[in-house]
Image (cartoon, rainbow, N blue to C red; front, side, top):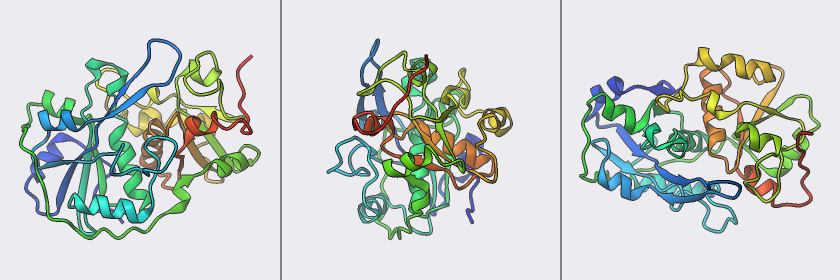
Length: 297
């Protein structure tokens, strides 16, 4: 049982700055979208962290240190042992209380929405660690509220992190293939409507995984702040596609297993702790010609 809520605000966090068990983690990655069709680019957010961050925060490299270096696609989940070693080196241990955030700045466009903190939140939970919360609104909201920032890097003594992987929270391509025809599973595509329909091509082929429901991640985020909408505001979207049906389990996916974690977080806030994320998502699926895709007429 977690000692933390799934999502916390700035007041909650500021009151706890200096708590010896607290570990604040900046999980920023920079995503650059193309003007039209085509794949986006990703870059680590370390430079942004070094320029400004919440006091006491350490930087987590989701693209490098916390990813599988041998995987063909970026930000693929590594082995439990690698993750445990790298997250432990940041000072996150079995007794830690972790708050993850990113350098959310909605004024800079959707490339800076709150994707990366939910990704690390999900990854920690995948390894059986539940004492983790997402800072709603990220650094952008923290600054708008007049809270302190610093450019001084923080560090903590290395800690022992014991991984206990919850394999049910990670969907692989074959799991998704079986889910297409399984009435007990709900495939939830969270990409924008044009990509979902196949009108826009970002990945190797156009379209969506057959039998997918659609809950655009933009419906889960407040467009004015980039922060998370409340559970009450997003419940109807998940009810509509059957993702809250107790007789079914959901698999969320997107382009690379990032925005899908926003949906997993919002579903967890609605009581669904069993949602799986397809880590490879359409980056992997569309590049494999034996995997089916469909487009809207």
